[in-house]
Image 1 (tube, helix red, strand yellow):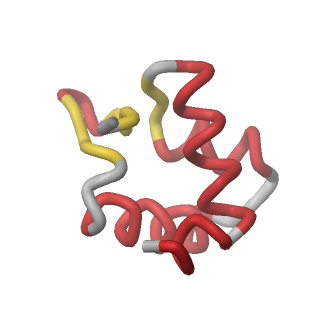
Image 2: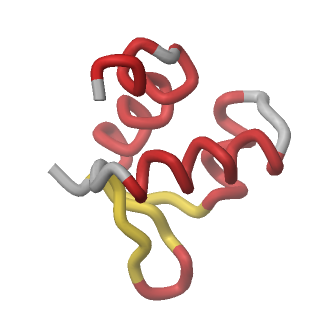
Length: 64
């Protein structure tokens, strides 16, 4: 998990979700200025590690 949190994009995503409670993937990638494909890969990884969850209407939320 340490490697996961050392990645700056993962840190940025978690900080963004912490500030905004929940966001769509589109909102996340727009705020961070990254591609949707890159954002999705990061979200999949974060979800698999239990750090985020997908809520109704495909919004991501911090899961800690």
